[in-house]
Length: 91
Image (cartoon, rainbow, N blue to C red; front, side, top):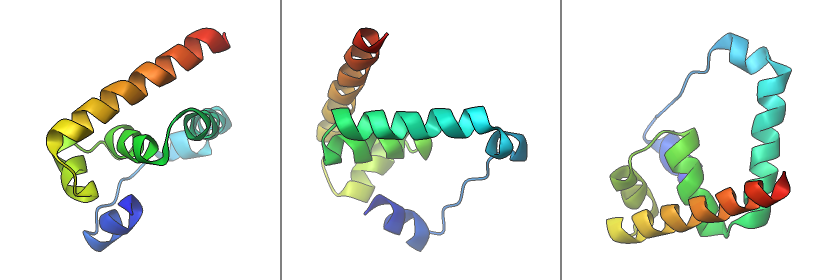
């Protein structure tokens, strides 16, 4: 859903070539993606990815997902708490 919206709006993000070719960066991003999918619901995952990876504001995320701003803010906060707790217990 989120990627379709970004494609239709022709929103593109450029990564620094050094970041893309850096295997540590790629590995870290893949590891986060796997962890996030394991810990979060699909909706929470969408909210976090749109907010962090695509750098959208909460208001923009609400528009993309067609949900109230308050819902997006609450879901983002809860998702961050889940991820924080996961990573604190992970180490």
